[in-house]
Amino acid sequence: MIIGDWLQKATETLKQAEIRSARLDAELILSHTLRKPRTYLHAHGEDTLDARQEEIANARLQLRLDYTPIAYIVGHKEFYGRRFITTPAALIPRPETEALIDLFATTVPQTLPLIKDKRRIVDVGTGTGAIGITVKKEWPDFDVTLTDTSSHALQLACKNASKLQADVNYFQGDLLHGYAAPVDTIIANLPYVNKSWEVSPEVHLEPELALYAHDNGLALIRRLIAQAAHLLVPGGALILESDERQHAQIIQDTARHGFTHQATQGLAQLYTKKP
Image (tube, rainbow, N blue to C red; front, side, top):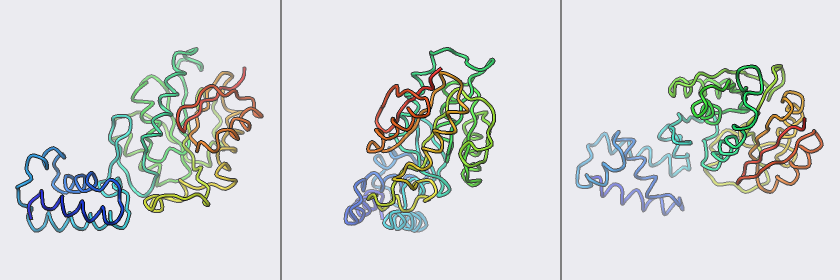
């Protein structure tokens, strides 16, 4: 089978399975199989696939038809212009999460540094490490710690940090329980999905530990807010991702712990601790 025919057949098959990104997914699967960029497929549509290439591509296509996320099939995902290794050990980085970095950027010009000679940042529930590693790469002078309750997630974050040459610290624990150092900024994309909410079939293939939380999805966020109230320095920032339906409640919860809501961008919210 030639490249063009395989792509057409795979796209039609994915469309029949109601996978919206059918053509893109077909191209990603085949380019990953051939170890060539997608542009290569466009320029070599008449090239013939050998039997082994076709077999591997078909096996990966079947995984996608079973709603395995494309990032798990190809083993990586782009985030803020960098490629992160992805495995079922952690949530797949999403474009909307980049808003956390954008909100963090708005805090950088303020009173810097806050603690001694470095600004201390903690990425709580780091997963792949995408948020914390991005902060470190964009602001190399900052002291960044990645935390997660999952040792498998921290191992994945460590691989990504090594691959991207990001000099970060690691802390395994239940949110920030046991973390004693004062912090300038806490950034977190914690599990916030309520199990009663409707989610796409692909989401069911991601780790439940990284997705769902009790108390209408707010249980972990509320615990982190209480911890942040003790760990953040006066004027420090707390940046959270959550569903828009939860934002009003989180604003109330943070206010009770001495925080002021500063900004919302998409799913991300920025709070500062009152002096």
